[in-house]
Length: 182
Figure: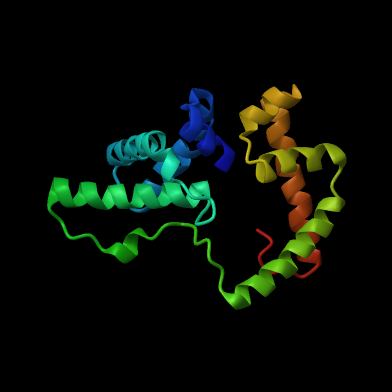
């Protein structure tokens, strides 16, 4: 995803922007609605956030955060600004924390490495067609539609294979005693 932001910053690449928009727009709206924003406000803030992405792509620093964290932070801040401006309300900053924190605590890092090892082993047990789709979806951060287009598979097949893969991964992780297998 960071490479798409770089393409926007360097060349005002509309295809890169469209890919990021398709991926993040629905997630930002859902995030904002979970924070209590009305659908119209969530849509407005999402549009404003994506406009900020287009205008300020050159300020994104992948060393400081992921693209998702950067966009969620922009959306959070825009929501606070709009609430203050439109309603004159005080906003509880703790209520609007972004969903992702890129800085794991030291004890979380060890636990995370152990979980990653379990997940890697579980993934080796997946059938190749399921593993390939999981890699495209979660390591390359492609949408199900993008995967369907790239592989030539029907969208329903992509979704069902990913769902089946997660079922297998969950069962394997539960069998290994990994508590957070969801």
